[in-house]
Amino acid sequence: MSWLNLFQESAFLQRINYMKKFNMFILPRLPVFVFFNICFLAVSFVVLLLYTEVYNDCMTWMSYVWTASEFIGLFYLAQFCYFLYLHRVSLEEEFKELERFIKANTGNLEDCTKKLKNLFFNYFQLRKMFLLWLSIIFFSITFGIAAYSTWSYKEPEIRTNSTVLPTQYPIHPKGLKKYCPYSCDDPKYFENQHHLLIYNVLAFAKLLIPAVLSFSVMRGLDIKYMWNRFILRLRLMSTTDHLDFWERLIRYTKDLHPKNQLDTKLRFIIPVLGLAFGFLGGWKSHE
Image (cartoon, rainbow, N blue to C red; front, side, top):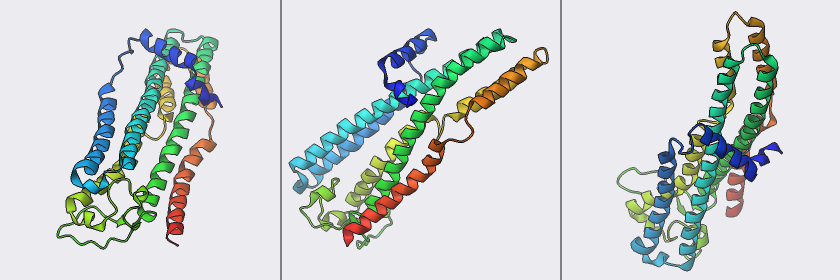
């Protein structure tokens, strides 16, 4: 599997050296990732406050272990996304360098196609990695929302004077805190509207924040936009002086990219499987 080459030390050092070549070692948009790291830590900190300040009965050793695991897991998730971000930014610069090379070597089809083939290998293995990662994120979101809604909660029975987020409270009795990591299982806890709101915000934030971070790393749902944009720029660069060269180069570039990929189709199937497993598991737990 070619995308595994991204995790080799030599491949990563090659990317770092490539970015140094274009004075990109201090990467742009670094504050975005710092912001998301702060969001992760802030969410976990609020959870810790709920355990220690709001409701003292929640102070158990499992509560602290759960909070500590959130700090560690979310931190490494952010670092992995930043690792993928390094590759994407570096690859974008590599496309720009190839454009400059083609412009300077117009008419030399052999050298241009050789460099284009090397670039396509780097692009294609990164795209496979991104599609796999996005499939995992989609599955975790859909499965998490389905399980959150059906596994641990029952229909809302609490009525408040004002409208809040759609809310359900734990179905399991007090004392089984393993089913409810964010707060106590006592229904009285949720009679407070602020506790109710915080509970739901924290639960959904843990599902949605990693997805938002992953989408920002990819700048969308797929990095194929790089290849399509490169073809468009080739068309804009073409001139009538070397018409045969440009036509052959553009045709070669379009034929190089596979038309249909199983990875792309699985990206739409996996979220459906996540919903199915989440709902089926939740309904099964109530039988």
